[in-house]
Image 1 (cartoon, rainbow over the protein chains, first blue to last red):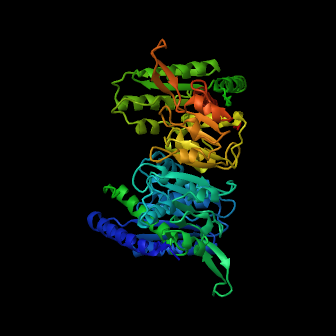
Image 2 (cartoon, rainbow over the protein chains, first blue to last red; image 1 turned 60 degrees about the horizontal axis):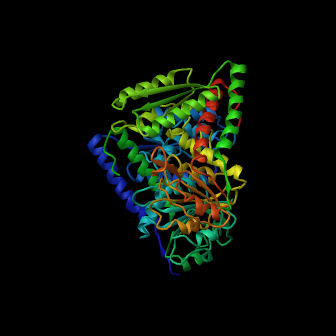
Image 3 (cartoon, each protein chain N blue to C red; image 1 turned 90 degrees about the vertical axis):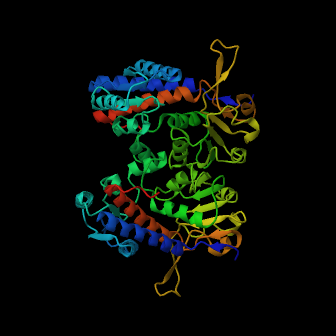
Length: 299
Length: 299
């Protein structure tokens, strides 16, 4: 194996230490404890584990965490009323609604009920628009974490070619926009590939960095890379594995072994993008509290 | 010359006939005349000519047009008050503020004062965000017109590679997002190049379609194209020309003659993208009036 492993857990830990210091300072100087509310409707096992991890990470940095669990048969008006109540609650600075929501509840309506000032996921149209335009906003957590991971990989993306595979609203589209903008950790030429691309390897072979967020194991293999490329693997897939206690193991969208032979650096799954996603959620929540209090933006 | 000329004037005329029919139907069926307000601050000659062209095109389709001219030394609160008044005026369905604004007036603050329902330029953060997410919105006029031009060129961009040169908020970024989304006149693999790209020809030579919106004559030449590519030229540049009555002529960002030798189709400047930009503004204004009245969206 040639590639350096980009350690998302280590970077997350260092960043969370920095966040915890910010939380402590805000408490000390302003008497304000940043508060994050996480709303979970139903009991999808993956969602439960995400929500639990987010709430735990939140408390570990000294923030207030509030978990709202609603039954799978909750109706949309009830969910909207809950979000509105959190939006009006001065102890809560950030609101996250765990997706997907059960069938019959409009994700759009629920997300739209969060005011932009508390939208720490960066999913509301106003935040997305501000991000694209370049106004102050909350950056969506996964792409934001990826920018940090690329930075620690040692790759300066300015003037380089980045290929993003996957066009989701949560990762692919904002990732492309953020990497192409002017400024630090950006200014890259960006190609956005997706399920409509006949042969993504034509593009990935030209790339200095490949961000793969396709939701399918084996989307990227070593023969599709230019030697020395950096690989950021956003996929979290469960593949059956009888040798594991749970009967499955996690893997990314990249074939780790073959990619690690060709790449100069690669994020593992688990332990790469995932920890940074949660970390940037905490970052945004601290930032939301600072803005509401009127403390200078740290960035 | 090999390339077919994509006639923006002809397409604009056909589309405006369709819009005029829609305006007439809305008047007849609902008693409502769509109204567009155009706000111009100062007397920048290019802006004056754009505003005049927009107001004239508006009246020609049977819509109400209102031109608000403010002096170059108008202060921001005055401009904001004017925009707010139009926003509250039920006779006005679309508001356009001609950019750029004089120094000292924040374009962000003025644009943000337009409610998304009357933002027929598609420049407010909410509209930009909705566009990226895929919600119902007003598409920005230039990229929207370009989608129509590509369509009449005979090129189906689905599965093809489009290279967009230029990352402006008005053209490049929304163009990339619109072409990459799922659906008709879209589903393309998109590369976004810009001033930070060391050599755009590496990318343009791979492209089935090149959209050039760099604001610089000669950005694209024939040797930078794959034979048979479609070229959409968004540039409107004034170059000195003593043989012309005004002392200048207009040209695009593409070197027309060399590109037309290699491309299969190309938009001229003038007479390409420009007429379609104004046309899609009228389209959005009709659409805004329909939505306020509650008539079914035609698209």
